Image 1 (cartoon, rainbow, N blue to C red):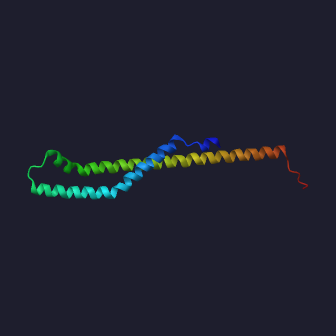
Image 2 (spheres, helix red, strand yellow):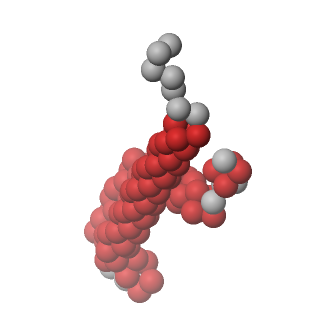
Image 3 (cartoon, rainbow, N blue to C red):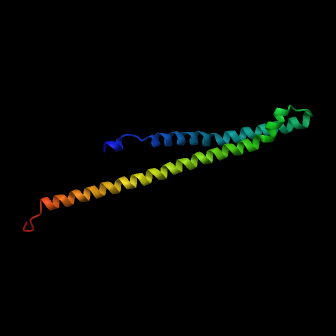
Length: 120
């Protein structure tokens, strides 16, 4: 019972991953709007200014691939969370099975040591 009351390191890691995922997931709508706004500004700049700074032009060209990398990172975090959750489910199922076996063994020992009088 004591082992169950101590929070394993994996639980802390899972909570951190879930928090990171939720923070990233919650920022997606705002980030999409920001990217659309930035893209519109760059389109206007491209039309109005013939010699954009090379860095700005590279950012404009790479913004979608950067966004894709961000979304891939988010997917990996979500996958890790699901893996941790599955591991915990299996671990808990094994713990419950062990407790059940222990309880059955104890009942069997009690039955052996204190047989029930069938005349009652």
